[in-house]
Length: 556
Ligand code: 16G
Ligand code: MG
Image (cartoon, rainbow, N blue to C red):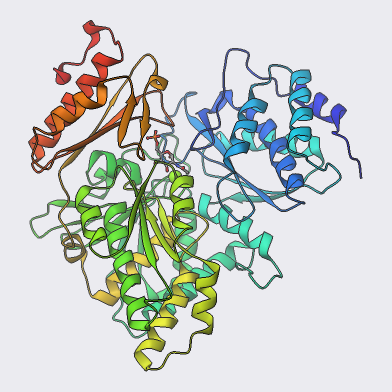
């Protein structure tokens, strides 16, 4: 065992993965994400970072996922890809290491890279004699294999032990990380194989719906991504317990991934994927996964064939109310406190519905913020409106459930259901397939169809807009991104506008993934929500010093 950096092997391999001199990389909310053919050096260096992170954590296994999620994959050289790191409990990389990752990815030369690595080893007190263990996977993007090869060179440079999990979903990779790191302990999360994952989910699902009338078949839009492969697998494990009809499963057709389908398409266009037009029947439920299967949006057509979307907020309302009810029936209300975490994007009507039933907290956009806030409850339900979310059961809560002595059959059934939910739900990260099964459980227990679920509350009309500005970093927010602190004076102008609209609410925040500023607005009436969004976007545009000649007409 050596206790120094393997400088020679890093250098010689790094020379084969030179950093493009004109590019600056940033580890953001979605890890590194940009045009695939610029990412070679980043992947190589992420291999090194993963190995160092593992050494820092005493050889615990770190995950690496190569994906660009819901981003399109045009059949050209401008397709996106990305990479993100997963910490040992299956959660997102710790924030301080995002900064290290950014610095390492931007070192201009191999020598500069060695220097940055040496200084990280010192400041982060990394014991280089520790082992390095990594597990990695990729989605179905054509650019994946070449990027994985660069990543593997990074592992090789560091002498890390790396396990290839192949082509799989982001949530399955997170599951693997936690399963590997808890293997053989009393907190074992499950068998660290795809079989272990599917068995765990499908067994829990079958227990939860035992004795219930089987749900009518569910149409699943797989976004032509890796969810199609996992969905096919899941189907086999579920058998007759739930019939899944998988659509948009063309994982090898160039350009098909996320194209006019998938969770992001449905959420942003508020439309049914055209490919499902002749497939989804009035009254039938359907859902869309995104390209790496960590987001889920439901929908249905009403009797008149009109499309209705059930987004992350509707999912949160459905599942949180169900958990609260089970806890109450179990007689555990005093011991187990359930809370919900949302972001500013949550529809105001969903926040109102939830806040009447349980504590609700609003945090900044990005899974890590929601996840951490949810960890503060005994049972923390978090969902972003875009369909990413999960439920976290704290370890003391899991212990309470295991030790509890129910005094009636109804109590004991409720406790069994809660225990099964801890198995059904992927607690490492939002997981479209696991969330889908959870939704199906609740619909089956409640005998709800899409329309009945939808009627829990009525969404306020809302509109999203984005504005390209010369410098989005000039926009700074507070209060979980609900208010601007800079540019100076802009927030009070927004307030003045909002006050003129009934039920009006609007906020402005810089995107963490794109070079734009995002605007959200809602109001009691559709036309008012649209108008408010456009007027606030107009304010942003003026304030940011855009060229008046290019001011979009709809902002006038
Ligand atoms: C990323 C985040 C997602 C967030 C979105 C916002 C993770 C894993 N994903 O996709 O949670 O909603 O960014 O994008 O954290 P924006 O900052 O461009 O609006
Ligand atoms: Mg995704």
